[in-house]
Length: 111
Image 1: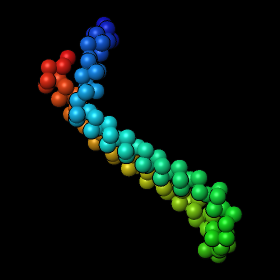
Image 2: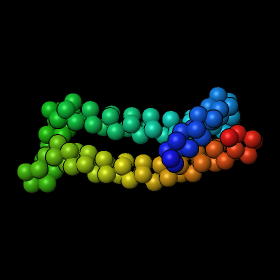
Image 3: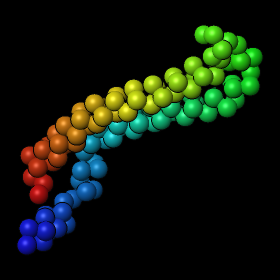
């Protein structure tokens, strides 16, 4: 029964009105800027590995018999963990911003 009630509430939301709100557009712009930039950083650094792996700069020994390729590869694991942590922390602020947009919509008389 609760599911039917929530479906009726979802049907009454005026998504066009929310899309027209400046706060919503600002929120989406900030979120997309963050997501696309963090994705670009990840992909660029990840794609560089096979390109740089056979270049002399990463073939040099850094620690004993460990070459730069191994250090770069380990750095990619660290980068992945860091980017995931940053995303999780940033997602919490995006959730708060989305809630603020919905609160503004309801304050203006939206259902």
